[in-house]
Image (cartoon, rainbow, N blue to C red; front, side, top):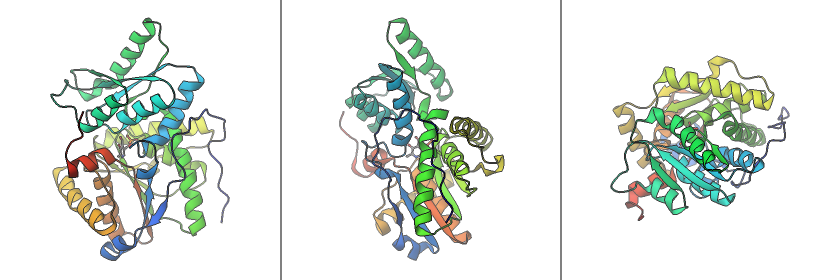
Length: 325
Ligand SMILES: Cc1ncc(COP(=O)(O)O)c(C=O)c1O
């Protein structure tokens, strides 16, 4: 078994949030239904609030903020963002305030994730504009706070900066060690992709470990050309921080899961995962990535790794009703 290259090699500041490693478990009952060999990487169990995968990015983002003695974390996203409450909680854990810049108009009733973020003490600012302007509005809010004498740090939505992606490069090292212990060389790893930092970190980290494993990102919000170049740029920037060569560009593989048929299939798969294995999936991210993993099980020889990225608040509230706020 090849030795794993430890990542990151450089001493980046890190603020511990997650309980790691998360389990890598064989889904035997799903295997009986779907065929093939299926391992599930349980990043729904990172153990910080309901942060799921985003606890990993936040360890490095908050680590950098603490090292720079920042006092306000400014970030944001959409009304359904899982990253927003994760960032709000992480800021609190590090003794920082948090301002969240959310696209669109203030809703009459706060969606569960925003209600949770506010319950963590975050201030919410609605842009009244579309999604594409959020990152610029985050920067503006940080500048406004700096002009008031605060020490803000601006983090792009989803935590998808090169430093945030380092959290997932570390996750790549983690899964490489787990798979080596099982003596498994996976055929493919499947992960949901929104803003791209998760997939980019994974790709940079695997390349840093000398693994050119296939990773399929399941794009839930952006068209393929846009998300492909975004993931590729983040992968290269993350690899540069790690001082490791990036993978080749053709390792950036994505499928589009934004069509209504994909959504309908995802909802059926979601029920199957819950009824068969007790796995809780959300409609936006993990049910769609799981549906793609299930398809790949049928068409690929070898082990499929489904990376469960969390989404627990919308997953639960879709089943049980909204959280009070
Ligand atoms: C549950 C879940 N899975 C996957 C992702 C995708 O991560 P990224 O935005 O880094 O592509 C997100 C992002 O918010 C998420 O909340």
